[in-house]
Length: 312
Image 1: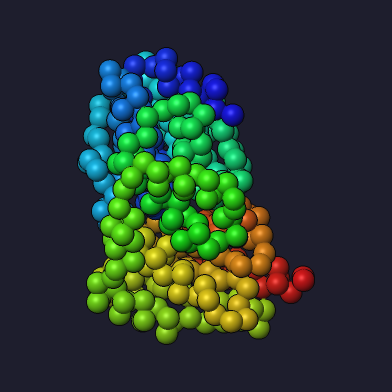
Image 2: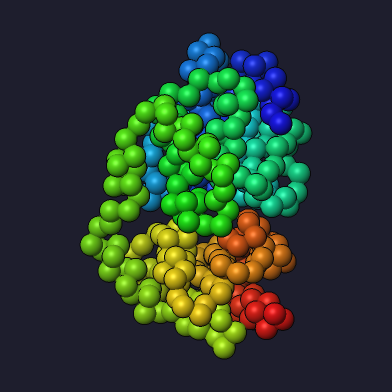
């Protein structure tokens, strides 16, 4: 599956690894894991990681992100990870590289790079990078394995989401055999500060439901500012407060920002991805997102989620 990508990694002396903006555990884990794999297998290569950061997952960093000059892209290979659309890529300069590669597990939205592997059978991009390592015989150190395993854990919901399958556990087993402390991962992922627990309690009180088994939270720009939390924490971080409500099949978290209304959509029953795509977003069948223009468009999306339930 990865023959062409492995050829390109072997061929280029300079490699720059990208992923999506506002990285989650899978985006960072795949980026850092691949970085260490290439460096350990080919110590003479120049390898860079670029992009913004999300405080929630800063504990995963084994090194700071690189700030590189435009000239670094000349004659280089750019690899884009865990990204379904061009607009989501952390640094658009990837397009100026001599060759481009995309490895992703989201539902296909558009062509991003000249060489691509997109496989939705993987629960995470970290799972795909692990498969790349196995197929290509790349070195996987405990540091690389820990980053990849962390991404698998976060994108599979601690191996609870229905994207988890036998392949998931084969990849996880391979990584655990490399030797790292899983307790350290879980401590950082799931131990919360008191303010974070209180923040989640406040958002739980904001949950509203519709007669069509849909739950939602809408946070205005003013409410977001008053919370003191960053947009990622409010949007991606709080959508899970609605995930285990009995009788709720789909849920959506709307967060107003200066750049539009961030929208995180989830379902335990329906394929909500077409709704996200309709509004310029994408993702997975049961976990997708989009950025909307305003509250009116947000309510239109909510109506579409209600209609999806009503159809059945």
